[in-house]
Amino acid sequence: MQPNFQRQVTLLSLIPRAPRKISVNELVERLANRTQDISKRSVQRDLKAMYEMGTFGLRLDDRNKPYGWSIESCWRGLNLDLMDQHMALALTTLKRSASQLMPPQSLQQLQPYFDRADQVLASDPENPWLYWACRVAQLPEPYPFILPQHQPQSLEVIQQAILDKKQIRCDIKKWINGKMHWLHYNPINPQGILIRDGVALLAFTIGSFDKRRHHKPIGLLRNAQLLPSAAVKSADFDINKTAQGSRGEKMRLGHPKAAHSIVGNGRYRGGTGTGKTAGALCRTQPKNGGEIPLNRLSH
Image (cartoon, rainbow, N blue to C red; front, top):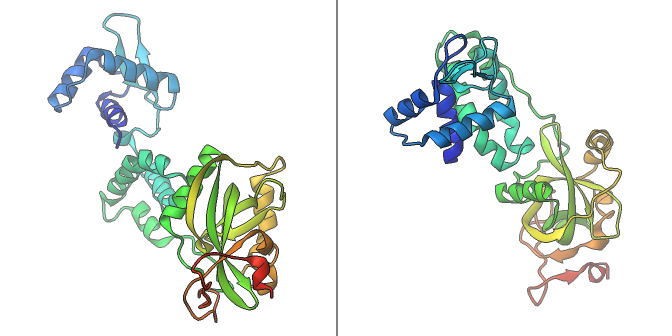
């Protein structure tokens, strides 16, 4: 956890709910009692920043000196110590799918809230919200074939590329002549990530001029690398419309005829395996151990 964030979390835990209040000097003293030697100026900056964000329920009483800080009496925000059962259940539900829906940086910032939510729900074994969390879950629908688990590092690269609006290069598993091969694509323009029936799909275009948009399960991508070049953005990209349009395409991903739409832009990478199932690799290897242009594979 970042030091500034940790300090702000601690500050919020020390601020009472209105009508009680606490001064900056008292906060500095209480932080010192918790072995956090923070200057008065730093505490003032943190309080000002959180107050201006308007998301922590902070209230400043500046009618008399010393000024007093408190949490609004009606506030039910993300103050860790004020978290109730409803917020804890919401955060627990979010945590189950957060790795696909959110970038790693945001997950790191939310981890203290996830941990606190676990504590709140587990505080009472008879808690009905804990019972609910253990009894209700969203399961993926059966898929036409078994998809491999995605590489965590590849997902992180894709997420970072979307954040930074950068291109990537990676290998994509494709059908060629009835067998599965890894094809190398460089560059790819990530447009967005869709979650369909529990499966994370990457919406992307290829190169600088091909405007066709494709959707592939991230489990069929490997060796993703972030490129310094800016991604080519689709002017008409709409995540909601894309999600609707990808439903039919996704069900055809394992079929050989669906693979040829982007084969011409890739380069073959040899692998090992039987080539008999969608989860396997072809045994064929290039003689020189390098890449084989796709037009040679058709001969």
